[in-house]
Length: 233
Image (tube, rainbow, N blue to C red):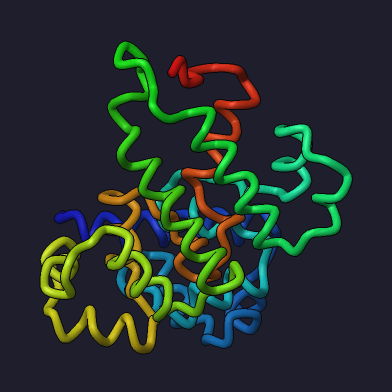
């Protein structure tokens, strides 16, 4: 099977595993997701691609980790208290809005991790993670840390500095399709996987538009907590 088929099959296996682990019948989980048990069965068996509405409902109605469901990799959301505790924030920071707290964490992460010594194992991924820090900062400053799906795609393009045509080529879609994504959102499973594979943007962030859900920030926060790969500059 091709990559697209693999992604659909993987999604199906994981949603079936989630359902079994939580003792839901197909009818019960289908009702939660506003689809029939037959439609859910087709998704679980890899015979049907999950719709955006289904993925959105999974995020809103269940405790299933969307990043794991789509990519097979479970990324934990950044907790605001972790950002504050890790960087020894002043008590006044606890009174700030969520976007100010995330910006505080983003700026500290950038200071701690970039530039990185060229011998560091982290160097090979530095551009990818630095991009996510820049994207997080824009979402906080321009959207008060709550971007709509269309805004997410617009900010991704602005942060990369690429044109609509160039972003469309990255996702192997037509320019009209990327323009639609910037206007309406509602990305497909394959489009979210492309963003994750190429830019490291996790699906949970694409759907929610909140920086606390960005896997790159979570991963870098864990690196900082572990005291590894810190900047020597």
